[in-house]
Amino acid sequence: MDGLVVAVCLQASLSMAPVNIFRHGADEEKAETARLSSFIGAIAIGDLVKSTLGPKGMDKILLGGGKGGSVTVTNDGATILKAIGVDNPAAKVLVDMSKTQDDEVGDGTTSVTVLAAELLREAELLISKKIHPQTIISDAQKYNDSARFQEDLLNIARTTLSSKLLTHHKDHFSQLAVAAVMRLKGSGNLEAIHIIKKLGGSLTDSYLDEGFLLDKKIGVNQPKRLENVNILIANTGMDTDKIKIFGSRVRVDSTAKVAEIESAEKEKMKEKVDRILKHGINCFINRQLIYNYPEQLFARAGVMAIEHADFAGVERLALVTGGEISSTFDHPELVKLGHCKLIEEVMIGEDTLIHFSGVAMGEACTIILRGATQQILDEAERSLHDALCVLAQTVKEPRTVYGGGVDIAVDNCCSEMLMAKVVSDLANRTPGKEAVAMESFAKALMMLPTIIADNAGYDSADLVAQLRAAHMENNTTCGLNMSEGTVGNMAELGITESFQVKRQVLLSASEAAEMILRVDNIIKAAPRSVHHASATNNLSFRLRLFPCYVFSWTCMYKGSKDETHKV
Image (cartoon, rainbow, N blue to C red; front, side):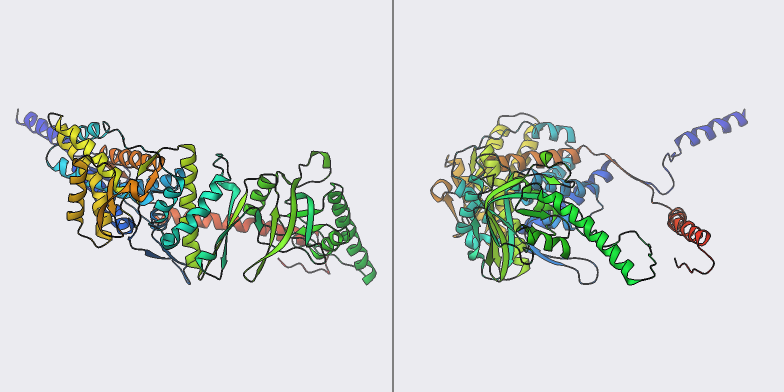
């Protein structure tokens, strides 16, 4: 009987012992620990970039790793988050969300990250009050954006640029961005807008050119100006006068034999150039190098030849001229040529560029950015890219919302406060715990104007209280005027933002916060063992060496006794 009792007790104790179902080295975080880890990681990401929010937000210096690492100065949220490495799963969710925001609409990358972090900060407080995550999520999904207005594209461009490096020249660059986007005629194809950065001058020297600029040189002794141009765009080797067979050797017994080989190579290249000229072109643009001999042949034929055009430039050039990139030239009737009215050389600063005007795609244009340093040019390009993306989205979705929280304006304090008021009013009419969750959502929305005021050095508590009071009196166009540190009328100041950008910010932030809130378990894979990684590397090394051994043996086998082969 005693033995039976001992056996039962032993079986019970074994059934209660934890069973590890994961590989050795794997880790698991459960329930509150997992949720706390997610909150900490996501909130830390929001705190990292929130000081860059608003027209008076601070910049960050990103120093690349390794010897002579690159230096980037920026306040663009997507650029900052792309440059940092994170291990926390929730932090990675916010980083990916910021990248998606940048890809979808081009702006609002900082806003969406900060809003998601504030939503999770409020959710953490609610969970500490024993409110279930599913209750919080269901209430957040009831929110519906109601701030939708019509305004001008120029005001949107100014609003977007107000938090960027270009804020002091936003009028100038707003006109450039709007003019470029309006040339697209509603297509929204930003590939037709080419941005070139040239050191020298000041930012105000930047301008819009109605055409396409290629930062390359025309061949020697070739025409520098052509009208009514037929363009063949190619990606082919024009250097076959060089032997490319690796390790090949040619033995001759006289210099005459060398001359025969060179003559054969030149004849082969001449045949290729003749096939190209049969297309009836007067301009040849190649992705690869064009060596001296084919360059001379093009010059004799009066054809302009441009070599080593970068792949992105060739792709865009084919798009705007209406041509296609070719690699073979045996069937001219199958090749689609590009066309433009005029090609000529132009000077920008101290550099010579090739200008294509009257291209087939009439909406194509080039924005030339000038600046004193490379860092300024890089940040100006990022800022202008954001404005172009926002304007392109606004052309497709013309609805806009009022901004406010700028130098003249950014990041939509007016609409954030208006949405917070709508949510709070709904919470007041909602019974039960759901009302608490909805109030927290409204508090998270009101944190954006609070952060913007803090970054500008103003009393955020006072300004946000004034703004809330103004909206309670149904002054729904009131927002923060950061140039004076007061509450102003956004309609009178002409401060508007794209509805599409704001909508994407709300959707992305809410969805990211909801996804993180649903997590109750984090499972980390076991790290790779050192022995396994070493064995793999050794195998890879042996596989790389194996062909060399075979090649060496083959050469020795095929060679004569008086020849020496080196591998």
